[in-house]
Length: 466
Image (cartoon, rainbow, N blue to C red; front, side, top):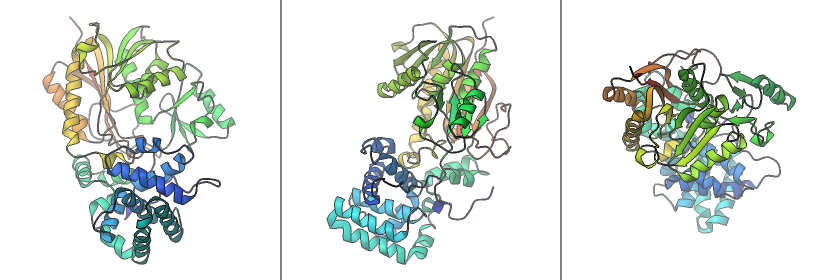
């Protein structure tokens, strides 16, 4: 796979130029500086954007996403121009302006003028420094870029440890994987089959002037992303937004249960928030499903999702705040026929949708997360009924959170049987159906469709009682 030089400078397919009537650029840059400063301090971009006033949130999100995708380059440029980091907000403003100046969303001089206006309103004493730094960048642009991109973090816009890990795990795909994270993922829908067929919903989309192609059993990949309120029947629960890779979970687990799933089959979704996989399982079968999550705030999103889809009225669904690994606090002693363990992970497979994730994680996080994944696997396996199935998944590219975890688990539980499942799914490789078996290596490219986010799936079966 070829990689274009200076991939870090490629423009986003989500151009942040605000529409007519939107807030002025200087105001958006000020809020973007807040968001970037929050990420620099270790807080998530999602939380930072929630603090934005509603009127400026969409424009700020578009700007901040573009900045996150070029933050490695912007950091290096700022270090070359201002070796001593300024105050956090001023630093956030400089990083935002430098990142956007490396794209083609705005004319350079407009960007400089608006950044200076933002500085005058947010940190007036620093406005002269902001003006001088940005104008120097415009004068020396090519020389500064050439020097900055000698640093791998600037060239690839990922932390060096992350680059090294992807290179180690996927030596044939590492450049394409890093480059893929610089582009936003497409919008994929999941049709609620309890409310109607996918073909019928596709017709409704066409009547609304939107085009899509079918993916998997319930999915539709939109040609262009749209706000959810423009989706026919979204508020009524006719459709949800869920990436292709995430939609594989329900299919894998329900296929393992067999063609004749009995109503009331007991299923545990051990780490359920925000609830997309929970809902998909309940849309597809009449299950007695318990959805756990250790975070009560995130669990409320599961409840909201199930209410929007009208699933509690048609299924036996229960949600509960609990640490799934601390089984003594929540388990009633009755075994589960199936368990979905969507384990906490680095999120390294969904960076194109969460571009700040790469800057928030540290290399030391991965072993700690692997310990959590092992703890959950070991705690939940005894809760599985004889002949039952456990589906382990993470939205991670790193083998330490995927194949290595299952290899280690099978050493501890040699009686477990591994069944066909995708293994590692990479967002640069299309996977043919039917899904491949237990190997952890990616399949060859099979077409132009978006392959979905980076994920890992392993399906395990417990021996039946003789």
